[in-house]
Length: 630
Ligand code: COA
Ligand code: AMP
Image (cartoon, rainbow, N blue to C red; front, top):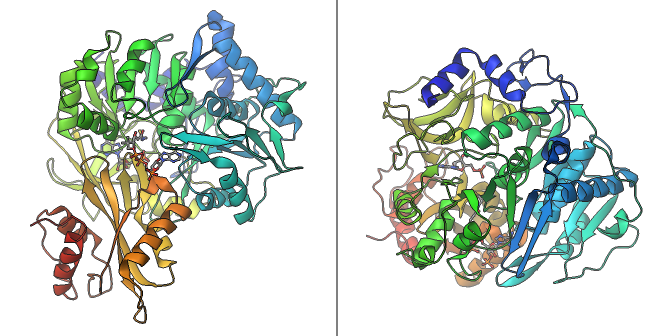
């Protein structure tokens, strides 16, 4: 079947398409239908089914005779450790952890926060929650205590499962003090915390609250899989929006199972038993969908990689892992390839390894620049697929579906919409624009299975963030265009979200932190173009009139403050003091114009600008930190 036939087939009969895809899932009670639209525009999929995610990701492979197959390969160049966990071993470990959680009172519908680095135990914690119907929320290890506290207050977890530390190449990240600090900051208190002690940092337990990962499982009855409703939340994953308050993206159980399973063959071109590797982190959506759930649901071997593309120990790490573990499909962020390419422009490291098992490479998380794709194509000699998706969608909106048909690659485009997604480019009035013209990218409702049905505890925000702008559509927050062949081009965000090294961050959230500094009267944060990370945040500070302090002192204090409040992952290192910010006459800060000035790209000051002279002041300030070249 061609892509065209597949897509048209879905469009003609979406119900039939998804019911057929659903046959690959082992149901406790099969769904009577796919789409539940009584409450439109709030849609649900397979809502009346009963099913368990962990059963589908783990137990059924054991029952089908593949218990000895490796489920997880842990490869940690940071700790010089390699370990393989078979499906049967994974089942036993997860059942034991789930049993211990249940014994401590965690039940179906309870929320559990997981704060862990790239170790297999992070996946085991996710699967243990799924096994008993608990709703997990994984928090990325690069976030500071304050961000963890915000998530604790929103998700209100009964328990928190954390590791004692994470390991960055240059330092041990002590999670336990961050966890303790977050619990102190939060209004909601978990009933207990499970601490996975790592040998690099054995943390002090809080008596009466903390239990040891191993100790609390001792002698406990393993838990069986608890069937849940198709629309039972599988997890909450917080992501950046316009403000400092993150959005809790909800994922439903059945839709995720059906959609993710469908993607593994059709998009990622792998069969059960093949090795699939997503070099991301469990704290991001890529980690949820493609380190943990999808490869396991589809019976693949997944890799948990604790390392970086460079420096652990060198720019050949990716190729070493691919070669050693016979990876068939590899997924990473363009920024990771840019880091490798910078150290190894001629691909010398690539030549050292046998990559004959590698079939294809996938890039997502940010725009894939043509140079990076060309470099990967040349040195790896396999199809390199740019595909576009978001935390909200959980799987790709647009891709080149290699398992169906390899479509021609067009540099700068993540190719074509996947079944389930009808993508339109709209003008401000919500009317589709002509091919080749820029507009807001919107997806016709309903979104397909596996995408977000709503935001945790925030129905109004769900409505205002995604549904209000274009009735009948989901607003992606991305702008771009479509060409005559239906290929999409994703050019920029339409909101205050920036993408730094494939990490989604809110400039609004950073502004809230800067505004909290006692000497800052007003501020703005923009994302400037960065050769390695795609974008980097830059802050502009207007100080209080009575401040006599040295500007560089205030700058280093705000840099420290963002690291403390949001975390190192914000990569906020640059700020400048200015007298005034450029604004429209109605007071809107001209962030877009400031980005053009910083990047040295052409711009036209808007007619509504209050005082154009301020733009020159901004340019001069940016030149002091190496931006806004003539
Ligand atoms: N825990 C704690 N700190 C973390 C962290 C984690 N899980 N991940 C990153 N950080 C820290 C880094 O140590 C760094 O700290 P520093 O300021 O003390 O150096 C800071 O956050 C910024 O990290 P990052 O932006 O990742 O920069 P980097 O220079 O460490 O690495 C890359 C650059 C490109 C190599 C790296 O970002 C990378 O591998 N990116 C791929 C991203 C990815 O997989 N994204 C997921 C979407 S698919
Ligand atoms: P996240 O929710 O962290 O996955 O980030 C989603 C955002 O990253 C999207 O809305 C886009 O802005 C950007 N993005 C992800 N993949 C791509 C891609 N292939 N091309 C362009 N932008 C992308």
